[in-house]
Amino acid sequence: MAPSSYQAPMRGDKTKPDTQSQTSTSNLSAGQTTVAKLLEGKGNAIYSVRPSDTIHEAVNQLKEQRIGALAVTDDDGTLLGILSERDIVRRMADTPGETLKQQVDALMTREVVTCTPEDYVIDILKRMTEGRFRHIPVMKDNRLCGMITIGDVVNHRLRELEYEALQMKQMIVG
Ligand code: AMP
Image 1: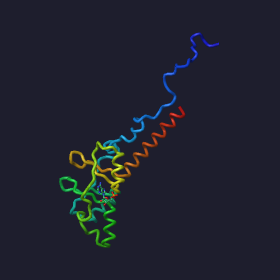
Image 2: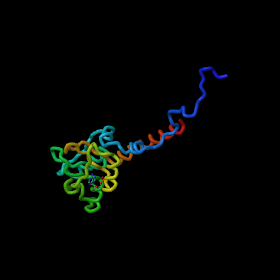
Image 3: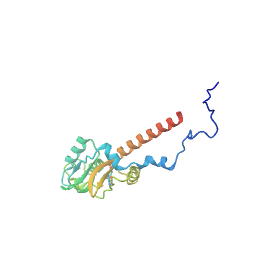
């Protein structure tokens, strides 16, 4: 027999639902990470060259730092362009054996698409995909403050998806 204090559950007793529906907030939260948040994890290191540096100097830096692009800045750190390994490969095809001695200035892209720390990572991914480039300098108050690569964005998104999958599993298992 049940103790006298026992109250059989009644319909309507439940205050918490067993399932949780997806809301526009929960669906959107994954895409709301900012560039600033991404930089917190990766740091603000910026590798740069000057326009007058040679491609030989640039490739040495690309090799040493194990990166795919360099910001091109003047002595004050003002962003003047971007030089990626792709620019160098193209020039090597055009001027075989003559590329390393050329200046960064002659190969760099001058019209640089940038972002700010407040931008959403999901928008940056779109900008990179549409522009067909894999690097994007981060600017704060007109100063260069970091560099985001498509690898950073994809890694971050994968971690978010793993976390979301884990949350869903926990919701199902209880
Ligand atoms: P990437 O895919 O980043 O190695 O670069 C492919 C091409 O786009 C190269 O010619 C780069 O100089 C250029 N590029 C890279 N990043 C940017 C950017 N943020 N804005 C404009 N051009 C870029």
